[in-house]
Length: 314
Image (cartoon, rainbow, N blue to C red; front, side):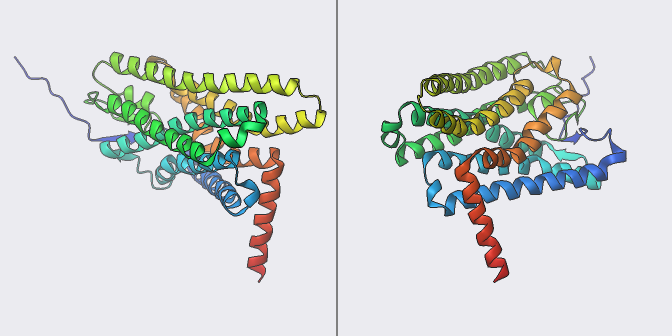
């Protein structure tokens, strides 16, 4: 009886952008601009929140964590993608792929939890304004923020473990521009049924719980806004929530499409576009959404920009 000839995969090839060789330099320039704009926008928000005492409250404290996540998210994937576009070196080691996937899922998971915490914060601020400072005190805010990062870490650890304990002994071409769960699972030469089931259950429970908290918070918020007597009060309350609600819709929509489905329905072209939306474009848009919709943030950003201009002129 002959022994099966099994080759263990020790590296992957990222094929996500290999079908666009004629526009690779254009894509390189475009993604560099998007990445730099993302860094500039989110770092500016972090500086504004740090230096402006008017923004030292729970809402902006959580927004600073969101900006940090929006810096980390493209930083995990874009530099390698730029390297692939410029040098055409599409290889990534097995360990490198595992590390990239771990940190990506960690950031995505943390952002899911953080968005639900931010929704709860808005619920307390609008529905219980007199108790807001007591409920959302510094200790509680710190615990909630740390809790989102810890929960994201363990959620990512679980997903990464179940993905990379699969057997990889055949094809090693990842149909994506970075390592992610669906395209990596699709390369496994062993059964992915148990892994997929666990991924979907965990993603459904974790993502579903965060979504339900966000949804219930906004049902109460909208109910409270509708019963406000002052039109100005309704406008102010809605304007503080509109930015967060826009970010929630962008992030949840793309994340659900990517992760809560079996690998058999994985479509490289569709998933590549959607992953670019939540992994590259959304982190760039978030600072714009918050700065355009939020009066306090706009004023703080103007002060930061004018201070930097004065420093440069002097």
